[in-house]
Image (cartoon, rainbow, N blue to C red; front, side, top):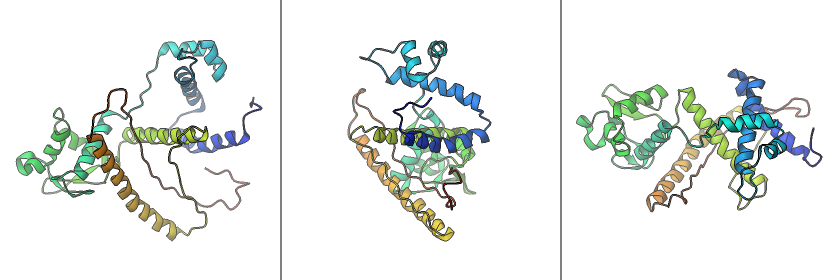
Length: 281
C-alpha cells in the first residue's frame, strides 16, 4: 500500500529508473523472483548499515518495520552475513592504474593522452616497454599475463613488430561481460548515490548536470556523438591527471582516504511523438 506521504513523483521516478534495469535482467535471464530475493537482501543490508539509532545496530523487528521484509527473513539474511563489495575487482583497478600511467607519464607517452606503441619485451624496449610499464605498477604480475588478459578484453592490440598498442584512452574493456558488468555496477551506483544525495537535500550538493534536446536529426546526433566522444574523453583525462597529481602530493591517514568518480555519458533514442500513450524506456 502506498504511503499517504509518499509523493507520486517518487514512484514515477523509480518506475522510470527501473525500466532499463528490468530490460537488462530479462535479457540475461534474471526473473522477478530472483530479483525480489536480491532486493530483500539489499533492503535488509541498507537498513542494517545506514539506519541506526545512536550508532546501535537496529533489531530484526526495527528492520522489518522499516523495510516491510518479514522478520524471519530479516533474521535469516542477517545471519548469512553477505559481504558487500564496494570496490572494483583487482584486475580492473590494476588496469586503470596501468592505462593512466601509459597515457600520462613519459617515456610511455609522447604527450598527456598520447600513449606510445610499446615494444612488448623489456629486452627490446628497455624502460620504454610494456614489461616495464607493468613493472612500474606491480612487481608481482608478469607483463605477459596482463597482455594476454588485455588482448582478450580488447584493451590493446599487438602488431607484427611485437609492439603493444593501446586501443582506448582509458581502461574500458571491449570484451568480457564480467569486467563490463563491474563497471556497470560501479558507475550506476555512484551516479545514483550523487543523485539521491541531491534529491534528499543533503549539502553540499554533488555536481550532476545534463543537457536535453528532442528534435535533432540523425546526422545531428551522429555529429554530437563524435564530439562528445572526443571532447568528453579529453575532459575526463584532464580530471584524471589532476586527480593523480593531487593523490601524489600527500598520503592521507587511513581514516581520511576518500574515493571519487567523475563520469560522462551520452544517450539517444527516437523521440516519442505521444508520451502520454507510449511508456518511455
